[in-house]
Length: 160
Length: 127
Image 1 (cartoon, rainbow over the protein chains, first blue to last red):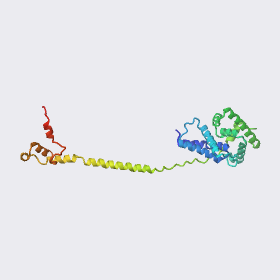
Image 2: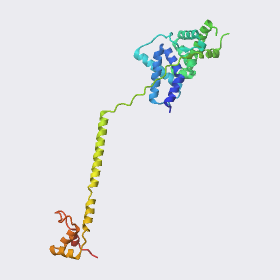
Image 3: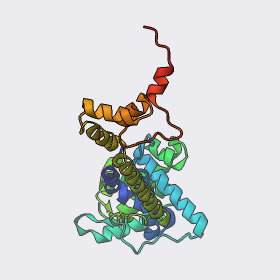
Image 4: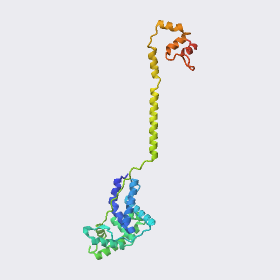
């Protein structure tokens, strides 16, 4: 059985990626953060997530479902909020952070979700397939396309 | 020279997502007790007190005290030949004398009582 401290540890380890994933879905970081908090508060009330076979995939799926429910209730679909900070840039590379955010915003949502889940969520293609309800081959295809586009744009505009 | 996939992934991972706000869980205070709960508690306490009072009263009013009192009074006056003669002289029967000596505080038997001697005297005991 997972104690409260164990759930808090999961929040510390995955909270940032979960909020980033949520932000890429609904466009607004505050709404995404609310959804993540809702998911973890429910977990704390239950006291465990032992029922989840894959805890990490379960967390991302829960956040996705929470946001889809919020969208149904509030009918609020916002454009991607590129003004807020999404990343802590390495070596204070704030220009790089803005650039990455802009390029991510140019990706179609399906590809952006896959990239975020794999790069920053550290999920495997199979886990992503379970979260999004698509096949692992589709995930791999979307990822390859999205990564190629990111590299093309970023390498052409920056010397990396 | 363009980066290969793993190098580019490593480059992207250097950008760490911003940590979310700390998850603050407010511990809800103890819910206020229903007034009926306190009424029930009071009622239960009253019942317990009444039960204790009743049990204590029953114990103190046990006839043990009377028995002890009678026992002491029975043997306070030793039975002498003179006293036995005096008792028998004024009584109508030996049974009455024995009853009076056995139960000195109750001089007469109640209407629903009978002498143990009379009951035993009616029985035919075969030896």
